Amino acid sequence: MAPTTALPTFYWVVFGLYEPLLTSVGFMGAVIDPKTTHDQQAPWPAGGPPDEMPLATRVTILQLGHVAGLLGLLNFFVLSACRRYLFSRPDLQEKIVGALLKPLLLGDFLHIAITLWALEDSRWDVSSWGLILWITIVTGFSLMIPRITWHMGIGRYVDARDGHPGKRS
Image 1: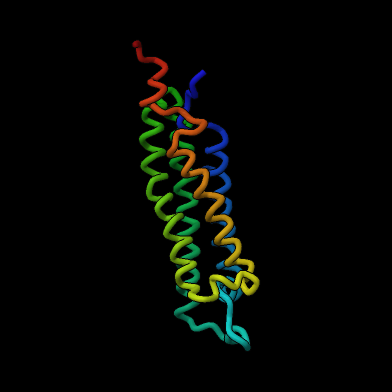
Image 2: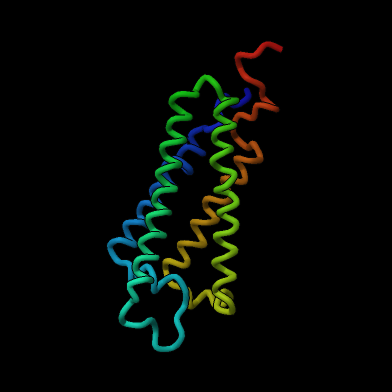
């Protein structure tokens, strides 16, 4: 039997619950302890990070945390609305979910690539990576891979393949 929703439970849990949870925790971490958030973004040379964090750096960390949290909330509300109001229209679900997930997939690739590029030679010294850097890379892949499978049509309704259940042939 063909899938009847463009957002089955697995994808809903990953993009509608897991991702908003990750981004909200990231935002809260930046608010609660911006210095640790900053200091664990990349390995430090001998001597470690400075004791004081510049005000501009603190503001930037908080703003980035806010943007990440906001993206998670957008996922939650847009995907919740798709599931709630478009349950009988998987063709429209597919278009709206796809419009949300396409730029996020591009963002996944760019986020990981830019992070690794910015690390320069320390990108290869994974033993020097801090917890937050590891979390960035691992969670990036944990979101990118399901986004790729969603775009491939794996385990979900695809209008071009499955057709609208209410349409007549």
